Length: 171
Image 1 (cartoon, rainbow, N blue to C red):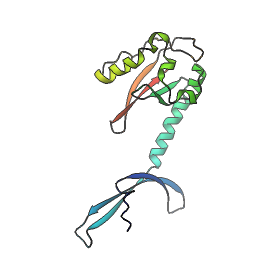
Image 2: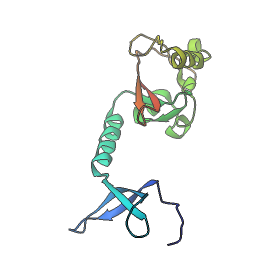
Image 3: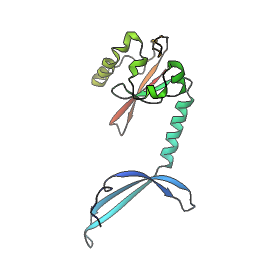
Image 4: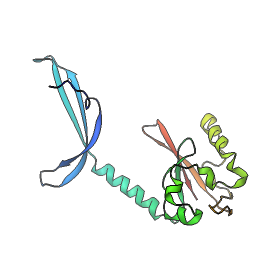
């Protein structure tokens, strides 16, 4: 025994092989617990098949990718994190690389762009939303600066066992 606890108490995804030889991904967790037998140490491994989870992830990504309307996922700071696909690129003129990691304010129309961060901050503090779960016409902005009318839908999605959230906008 090395005494190296680098893997103890942590989980990680690793490849595994079924009896029939097919490979799949598992999550492996290792823990050490005390025992009243022999040296007093027992190591326990927990294995979880990630096949179903990976299939759900692929399905979710496929649904978003198939959307004919732009879909964005932003974090609590208004930073675009995910769901940038062809419809968003075509409608707004930015590349996916330009979108991801950038502020959603770049596509918010001039009337609201400088206020969007305060709208988000206010919602995070109070839970009071003006656009969340409603529909109304607003003017977003393309990369070239032109504005057009859309009727977006915005919803909050809680993630990570309720310890985080993503705001999803359907344009």
